[in-house]
Image (cartoon, rainbow, N blue to C red; front, side, top):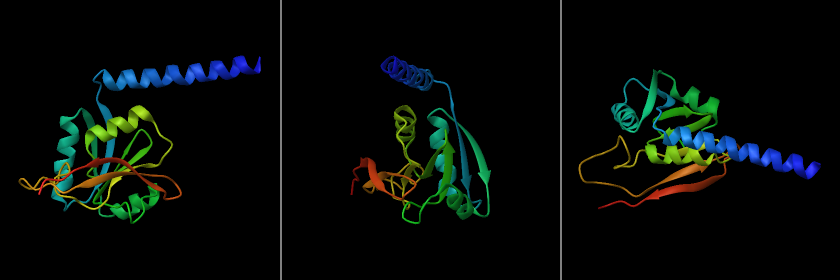
Length: 155
């Protein structure tokens, strides 16, 4: 009986994950809340990147973005210019939309993903032909960091 309950629980988890993945692939817009400074131009460009990739963006302009970072556990090592929340995950900085979708489909047990700093060529940071190499990092509550995805630059 105990094994049957475990199997049923696993089946339910797989079924629910399948429904979430189906919703994401069905083209329904994904809601995301972005907190940003009123003086940062690149944040607006990142919002446009999200909108072009089927995100429904709620844009919250604030004079104290650091308070949001503190609230959601974004360390100084992971920090960038804006912080977003999507489906209980933190998205810090110029994370490409495809990495956010990967996060939402795979549902890892982490706090969120980040592109620390402001690398040239990341979404919203396009500056001509220059593209820096950069990593999208995952982070957890204990500030353990791992590479979630990597992008090669072109110099």
